[in-house]
Image (cartoon, rainbow, N blue to C red):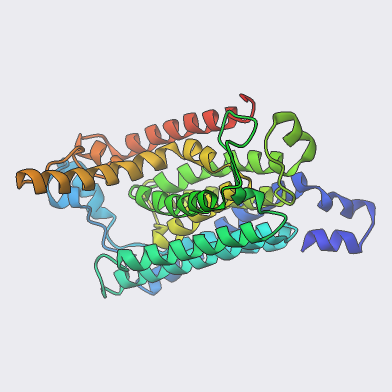
Length: 375
């Protein structure tokens, strides 16, 4: 909106809105301030509607943590959930204000709304006690796979973005490893979007954990989208140039500000949880932007902690089923999955787990950014 306004008013003060760097900074600050202003009001509204989470993890029910930790977790019961509404609302309003709308921005923003709607439906079933586990897994996966497939095919059919699907790019290498492989490209794009959405969702189990790690990833993609959208920088660093990708920098900046604002209320002890409404949308947005700048494997590196969380669940479930079929009794690899609950079972305080996962996330981010130069 402000970009279009700057075109209508060709006076010196307004020309600054034509620079993506200025608009990205403005988006980050706007999203942060909006989150800080709307946050208390949103929390009060969620409390009034009684959209709260009966937080009682399995490890507490099983007596797997000490009395102090159990008391802390019991204190979380009744905390408002569905805080993802705040994140998505702030993000979309900020992007509407600061971004120059193009197909890449529209695709990301609309997909976030769809995934937030799916998460809202899941949270709604839980808070209204229609289902203790929320929406059925097949419903969630069907919606995610359908959305991701539509996005992948749309990008392939669009002449300006067909290379994003037709070629497979991997970190540390200058040229695509595969060319003219749309089927593989579609599968890779779908797995990236669905995997990212569910990985963030699985990581949302402790105060500030998922939102803090998302913040780190959004910072990585703020840098990468800017480089991908800049012809000079992309050519110098030998990364794929994607026309219009620089506007995704504004989206990443808005995500950064929204995450910082939400973290203010979600840090320990949390005043609100994002729920599936936020985690599915944020993860999906990261996956979509990774596909849009032709760097899906970089997300695998930048979101290394998310990957570890998801793998811990897959390995735990797979090994349990395999050993139960073979030996009659299911066996575990971890004390509990996702991974953060494994360390909780080992007696680590929640704040220590979150902080150490942050450190691991920052290390993953540094490695991801290094792929831009090591080619």
